[in-house]
Length: 55
Image (cartoon, rainbow, N blue to C red; front, side, top):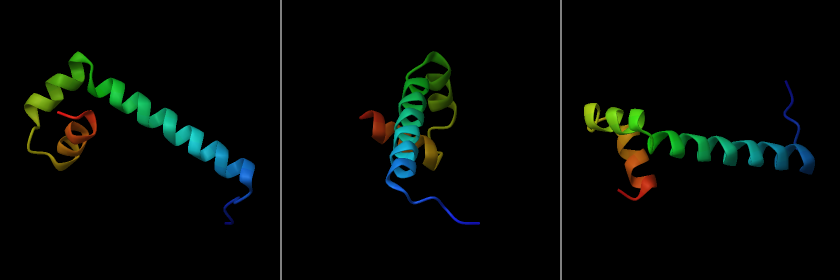
């Protein structure tokens, strides 16, 4: 399978990644996200999210 490396395809993927990043960070700021942070504070993925949020 070949990956489309045209400028338009790359731009589309970058925009999608940016949207997903924003959604993930906004979910991390929600009440459900705060609950997960409390319950799983030792989880490496949770710690990375905390750093990304500046906490």
